[in-house]
Image (cartoon, rainbow, N blue to C red; front, top):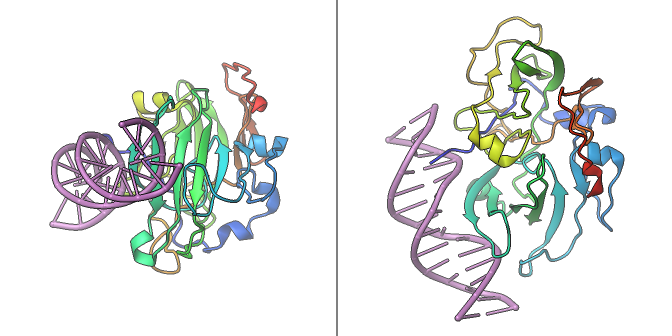
Length: 272
DNA sequence: GGCATTTGACCCAC
DNA sequence: GTGGGTCAAATGCC
């Protein structure tokens, strides 16, 4: 059994409503809810979100409220999910993954989501079907500041996650475009750069969490700070990165920084 | 040992 | 009968 590599950013000292405190200009990858006809904007595209949801009864569902989103970042939606099933769907190239809110038992939260990979592009496009609103009341967790550093020789891009409260960690992305982050026992979340097969099949990316916000060593090279408590009784996982965007010209943006990979393949992801 | 994930089986709607 | 959604035992990791 291969445990899904997951990663959590968190800062116990950060304000719980950290996302709400952030300047809107930094909410680059925040999937906004907007009802109505699906549309997309260049800004949303840069955030990995190509299509917003529509309300009503979702595909394949019964009389349950559901909505659909197409996204390149299916794991970044601001909530904590627990995978409970996976099924090969007829006529679908990729299996469908089933998630439910991690607080289902604790707080009787009925929220769930279905994850269906739509293609094998790089990055792959996912269709995410959400069912039921969250009633768990878990607030989004804080977002770290992400700063792109020029890659050291043979080491790939370094992503430094500096959470507002002072704890931080680095995620070093291999130059082949993979980025996978892991901690133990973390709720399901993943940063993925590149196709899913690539994400799972190659050597793991190296992650460091040895620098705090001041740049001084504060963490061991493995392990990251525990997620902040949600309302005091359990962490919630943010799953959108407020200052990170994977652009479709293969540029990656981190706040005001832009990183251009060496091998720009010029995929036109804007056609979705 | 505890907990999350995997995966085959079961249930149910169409 | 078929396909999709969920359950739950098995498995594996920390």
